Length: 344
Image 1: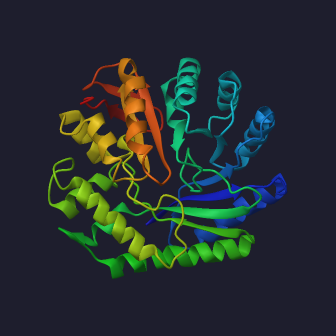
Image 2: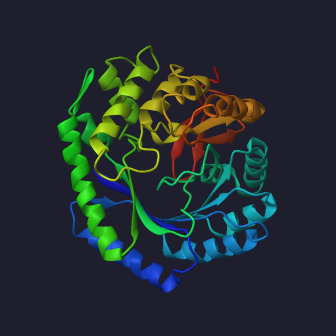
């Protein structure tokens, strides 16, 4: 298992940059003494107050030098040119927009036009938010609270605990407990509020979540039984993490461009962008990292929003606008070659 992210949730303005820098060094040092590999250290800020857009982004641009990634959530009207300007200055800056499809599409279009397609991977639409999670771009800090959250990468670990129709819950608890013990040490030494571990099952390329779902269901991903398998895996995650400070999404995640098996199925036409949107009803984190041709972008985003909005829990949308047709391959920095799936 790997630590996907340690995210400082900075909800107040009382933490000086010098202390943040010391906390980052301490976090990296503590994890280096464990058996885990730390992938990233992040900061999530709270939304800017009305009239303080540039102030919040100046703060984010400055703090971005201390960590791998930083996130700013937006809840009030904003100037997309200002936001894109700061995203150009700090290429590790992520932004989420709360429950406004039009604003999301406007920012997405402006950003891609000025900075290229890669920037779309740093922008999301948050639905039914805010969501306090270590996952980006939708992470939001709790107002007036400074705390720590953790995210994990453990698709390979859970694959060894899964057989058709069954998850070894006791084995999963043991996997979680080891991470939980490290987390408790971190919040204790950092003197931060423990805001929880997001035990979401998330992929990274060959560490495939789609592969885990196929092993559990006994069928190719996308066929009948896939949504049921996702639901039952979500229930296993909830049961195993119940007494271990769960937080955030805490469910199965299916970011298309981060899962090699999903991309393989998209290239062959066995799954479509529309099917991924429909499966989001069972996968609370939403529709993520799906490349969509420009001419279909607006319609697709509204379709996904209409699927996700009625749900009672927070979720999100992150799409990649492309100027190619389904079946073509797009190169996206940090992610590599991504096949465009059929729309439907």
